[in-house]
Structure formats: structure tokens, C-alpha cells
Amino acid sequence: MRPPEEELLAPGHRACPGCGEAMALRLILKALGRRVIVVQATGCMEVVTTPYPQTAWRVPWIHGAFENAAAVASGVEVALRRLGKEGIKVVAIAGDGGTADIGLQALSGMMERGHDVLYVCTDNEAYMNCLDPSTLVLTEGGLKPVSEVKVGELLYSFEVQRRTLVARRCSGVFFNGVHDLYEVVTPHHLIRATPNHPFLTLERGGGRNRLVWKTLSRLRVGDEVVVLKGIPYGSSYRFNFTAAPRAAHPVRVPERSSPELMKLLGIWLGNGWVRPERGEVGFVLPKGKKGRRELIRLSQKVLGITPTGNGSYLYLYSSNLVRFIESLGFWGAGNKTLPGWVLTLPEEERKALVEGMMLADGYSSRGNHRYVSASHELLRRLRLLLQTLHYRVGRIHWRGKGERCEEPLQNSGYLCFRKGAPNPEEYSSQHGNPLEGNDFFELERIIELRYVGRNQTVDLRVEGDHNFIAEGMVVHNTGIQRSGTTPFGAWTTTTPAGKIGRGEDRPKKDMPSIALAHRIPYVATASVGYPWDLVWKVRKAAAVKGPSYLHVHCPCPTGWRHDPSLTVRLARLAVETGCWILYEAENGKIRITFRPEKRKPVKEYLRLQGRFSHLTEEEMELIQREVDSRCRELGLGWYG
Image (cartoon, rainbow, N blue to C red; front, side, top):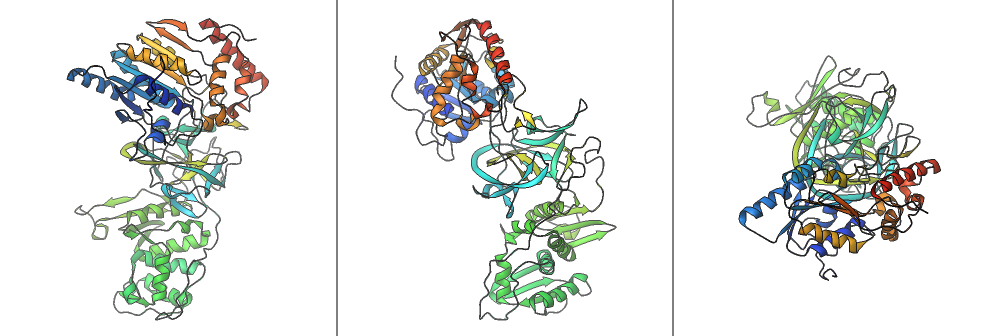
């Protein structure tokens, strides 16, 4: 029987050309028809088919969290049963990450309890990650929220082999919808990310300490992560500002930044304002305060004008100066902030800005400093700026309105920082530290991991070493991270190949066998290369009373590094070589559903994929032997 012509996965979704998963979803929905409720986990297909507020699904569809598609589907199935609704099939769909890794517990529970649910794993053998859109990323142009990064921009990155700071180009920006977010907290850094976002960590043991990528879900308090230590270079900033030739109260507006100008702007950041209608730049600086004397000196030297005023107030009158300050980006979202370009300045100018801010709203005692502000965003960015100047910076302390605290801190916050050697309890020990003496990076211990809720998320893809600096931490770019079903030897961005690795060193997790171990009525494997076999198995699984499991092999041009036109050919080669075996198991009895007359050599399948291009002949022979062993277990013949 041919599947219906009606398309239940609408065209116009954002899947890549040649996407095997998109092919699988289209065939699965054709086989199921409209009498279904689909529960889908966070993942690649959820992202590309549901860009809010649109959806490509023409059947009832629910988005579950990364780890609980099977749990949500179980609840839907029980609800339908209690309501007496018959003839509606509940289908849970998740990728390999949401099935073999973070979602395994919920899947096992669903099968163990015997829910009447069809669970489909669309397996492309890798998976994605996301960041909170407000996450500050270090670009060549300075700090910028990750949601504002553009394709083609240069981002700062950790160069793995030389362990230094380099600039790499952004090659992709992806808005990935709403997901669960967790905070990773060290003594001096904080970042929000999804559970599968990888961080660069130190792995100790066996007499060999090395830097490895570890997803947030695998991080533990006490783990050591790589953080930014400093940016020892930069250049003065050229301002894009043209003075009005006949402006009232003319001043000398600088063309480039300088230590004196940055110190003056730091004083203004602390307690200054502008009133454009009056051409007024004002300051609150009581008589006798050092900041008042510095403001007068710097105004005369940099701007060629002397402030006027009485008591605690000083004023600079110039419409050009007002326009100049407004053009610098020190004001945003209704409050003061630090514009991103500040982090591109030479160290001397960055230090001068901090000195000016402390003259206005800072307190110092015996080498310990505290800066107070009513702007949380200003404190957040100041924290990152101080880290580039080798300060030890604490967390932001905030006091809401009505809380008991000192008057200057009412509805405001403060940040403490100091110079000096790191606390051994906060930082990695020097013994076996691969970043010892590094000018750019160091290791900090995680002191807290906590769930913070759900929010919109953004992914970046970065060329080269596939990482970037976010909130002062080294994190991995989007996609192509290893999952539990990544095959042995495969390159992924977290199992790189080259001088620092040889690809994935663990075998692919056998999820169909794990499902079989639960003794459920129906388990099957399928491939987008054999659509009739896939459609037949979907219909068979949907007709089963009780839990059924279908594992679909789906080539991914992006992650596998193959030409999009080769998707179906690769899917078929996986079967023809025995790397992927098509079978079904009814009540535990396994039956091969496609048997090649003669299996082809595994190298024919591997050589068409860039993710295996680093393998030697000996390594490919090792994979061949493992495939042969598995084929003998299931009764497939030798290749020839």
C-alpha cells in the first residue's frame, strides 16, 4: 500500500539541504496519518520545524524538554485512556541525544511501565547546544550579546594546540527556541546554557592531565573549567562622530580614545547625566572629593573647557559634548552600561576607565575595591572588563527595594574586586596544570550548578577550533557534539581528530538492544535509504498495543561532512556494508528485514564522509572487524 499523498510535515521548515532527519519525519507522518499526537524533545528537528510562532507540523504536536519526551508522551497516553479517547496513537520523537543520553531514564521508565506509545529515535549520530540570548560574547569589536552576533564577525577563541587567544570567524547563528537553562558558577564567572552545551575542562588522572570538552549535564561542583585571564593587547578607539560646526558652547571633541578621556568618561559613568535640551553634561561630585579635582583637570586637558557649578554639582555646557557622549553607547535599556568597544582598548585605557568609575562611585580599602551602581547590566559588563585586567572579581551583590541595607545600596548592587594571587581553593592547583604561566587563560573550580528556568536560546557556529569566549568562559560552538550513538572513530567537535585526538574512542550505544532488554512487544531499526521498509515498520509499530521502539538511521550532511546529494546513497551504504542492520523484533524474536547479497567493504561507507577522513587503513580494518562481529551475531554474511 502506498502512503497517502497528503504532506503532514509542511514545506518551508529550516532543515539543511539533504537532511536525513527531515526525510524520516516526512515518511513517519505519512505512515501514521492524522490520528496521532506527537511529543517531540528539544533537538535539531524541533528547532528547524517550529521557529516561533510558525510550525511545520500539521498534526497535534507538543514540545517536551530535552530529557523527557517519553515521560510527556506517557502522560498524554494515560490522559487519553482516562478520557476514553480511542484510535489516537501517541508518538514520542527524539534525536540521539534526547534518546541515548539525557533522555534514557525517561525512555526506560516508559517502556518498563508498558505505556501504549510509539517511541522513534531519529539518529544522526551527534547533537546540538544553546546559550541564553543575553550571554556576552567576546568579539573583535568588543563585548556583544550572543543574539546580536552576525555571520562573518570575528570572535575570540581558544586555540587548542598552542593554548592561546585567536580570532575566528562566525559561520552561523541559530535561534533555537525556548529551552531549559542552567547556571555554571565559578568564583569569578557565571554563564547560563542548556544541559548539552560543552565547556572546556581539565581531566585529571592516570598520570596524564588533559583538556577535554564536557557537556554541562556532566559537570560537577569542583570540576575545573577554562576561563579568560586577560587581554594584554588592544588599540585606541576611533570615534564615528562629526561635531556640529555652529554648536553652542563648542568644546574640543576627541577623535580617538586616550587614558585621560577614558578616565573622564569613567567619572561620568559613575555619577553623570546629560540633558540634550540644555546642552548640559552634569556631575554629582562634592567639594573636597578627589574625583571633583580630577574632573576639572581632565575637562581642561581633554576638552578645553572648565566645569562650572556650586556645592556638589558641576556642569559642562556643550551640545556637541552631549551628542558625543550619547553616540558612545554608554546608555542602553533604560540604564547605564559599558559599550562593547571598551574591551578592545589598550590595557592602559581600560584601567583608566575603571579608575574614573572608582573616583565617582567606588570605595577602596587595603587593596580591596567595591563599585556601586543601580545598573545591573553595568555591573555585569564591568565584571568582565575587570577580568581582562587580571583582577579577582566576586559575584554581583544586589539589594532590592525595601531590603534592609545601607542607603547607597538601596535598589542597587555592588561588585568587589582586588589584585593579587588567586585563592588556591578557587583555582586549579599548579601541579599538572596545562595552563600554568598562560597569559590568556587559567582554570577555575565550579562552585555551583543550578537550574534557572526556561528561556529563548541562541547557537553560534565558529570556524577553526569551534569555540568562543562567552561570559569569560571557553565554550563550544553549535552542533556536531558527540552523543551516545556517535560511532567509533568519528570526528565531532567534542571528539576532534588531529594532534589532540583520533575521534570518538567509544563504540556506538546499541539502543535497539537496550529497548529489547525491556521485553517490549516491538523493536525495529530503519533507514531513510529504504523508505518502504521504514513506512511498513512505522505502521506495524503503531498497531502494537503497548510500548514500541523504532530507531531510524539518518545521515546529516553538516555533521557527517558529506555532499547533501549523497544522503540516500550513504544511508543505503550503511546497510549494504553492515554498519547499520535492518531488523525487527516481535516479542523478542529478531528477524532481518533486508539482507544484502554480498556486504560491501566498510571503507566504501567511511570514505564518503569527512568525519572519518583522518582514519588510517589499520583503523578502518579495526572498524571492519567490529562490523563483521556484529553481523555474525545477527546472521548476515561476509562481504565480498
